[in-house]
Length: 223
Image (tube, rainbow, N blue to C red; front, side, top):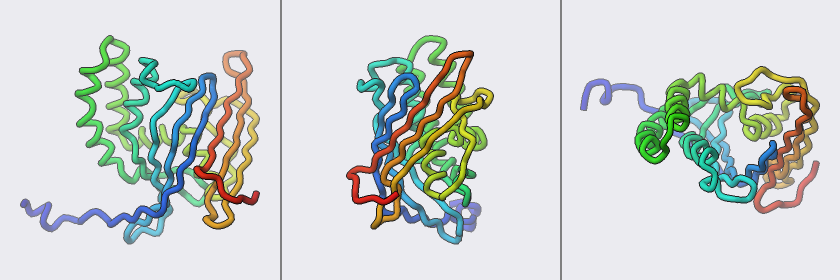
């Protein structure tokens, strides 16, 4: 064992608290459905606020994402991010990807499989671009800040007043109207349901994105 490993600073201990599972549905224009398990985290010697997110299998319009080549590629690349551990500010904004080193390691292990399984120049280009993004913590953080469920859930959980959402990923923000409603569990004080809708215009065409997240199982709630 080298001197660096022997005397270097160890990683802080992390405690994952009781998880809460949601069924999430996002409609724009296809309907994406998946489960998301959320847990509060305690990080040794760090008073910050941390959450862990674990995403289940993604379906597209009620069918497995593997039935759609592009969706399957995106789902398999995106799954490398999970479990995702993030730091959250008091206003609900995502400020840090806590387990970025682990994400990079998982990508290094999975990238050869993806390059072998998916063929064609567009798929190869997508995989290479994904790898470049995942190696950059700032790029991963930026992507997570554009995820509608993550940003919406964190905002609601922290009682924030977020008014800006990135509805079209990696493009210039567009003006929109939005409505977000939620219920809180009386006993756990965790979010039970979220119902959100964003109405905007893209390329001259009216658009509407909807998100629902329902806790499994639903318990008695109070608004």
